[in-house]
Structure formats: C-alpha cells, structure tokens
Length: 185
Image (cartoon, rainbow, N blue to C red; front, side):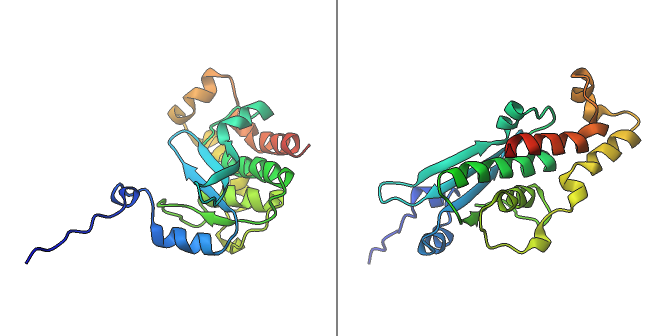
C-alpha cells in the first residue's frame, strides 16, 4: 500500500497564514483591521476580502506621523496610538464604519502597543468589538512613562538619539496632544 502525503498550503507551511482564523474573519463579512509591528514602526491597514485577492482600502505606517510633526520613535506607545487615530481618519473618509481586528501571529498582550493602536482607531471613529480594559492607561498613551524614565535615567543611553536631535523627552506628553490635534484637524 502506498500512502499519500498531504502538503499544506504554502503560506501555512511558511507560518504566515492561519487559515482557520482567516475563515472566521471572512465569515463576518466585515473589513479587517490588520495591525503588524516591525522593529522600527507599526503598520495598520483596513483590508477587505475580494475573490481575486484581499484589497487594502487604506493603510498607515507610523512613520507618516513625521508629516504631522512627530519627532520621537515611531514604535513607542504614543506613536502607535497616534497612528491608530490617523488610520481611523483615513478609513472614515473612505466610508468604513466598522471592522474586526486581525493581529495575525503576533502575541497580543493586553495594554501593549497593539492595543494602543486599537484604542486610537476606536477613538478615531471606527466601531470595533473590543474590551476597553485591554487598552493602555492614559498616562502610557500620553508618554508619561517615557518622560519620567528620561528624567530618572542617569546614563540616558536609550535617549541618545533624542539628545542628538536636541529633543526633550520630558515634553513628550505635550507633543502627543499637539500631534493629535494636527491629525484631527
């Protein structure tokens, strides 16, 4: 007797797609809010299913915050929150009113940067089913934890880039509010 070997789909073999989760998302018939993080930025997209392949309705990379005056890291909690607001503004302009979250294979720890971005999207006007207890606190969203650490740190090696650009992390909470107003304007 010969046994036949079943070969899994390529994207499943590569660890890039969980087809069981994808089927659940597609059955909802709602657009997906896809959130992916890299080492230097956060990527957010609103994606709709199409028979010929998923279509990206709108997307934001947190590096776009530089156009709105953001001078700090594009991967910290305040930047992720602001990127979420920016995506929501673009999505509302394209008549997207609701979505479901797709974190992919990332570990989605409550109160993390992923949930900061999700909070920005919700506050920006999209309806997304989420438990609000998973959102980071307002002090983390405003960057107070970074400002306080900057003040206490003696060597400040982590903030060397800010020193070179003559930025003051103590003022980050003010800059979050200013950038948020620019995005919403």
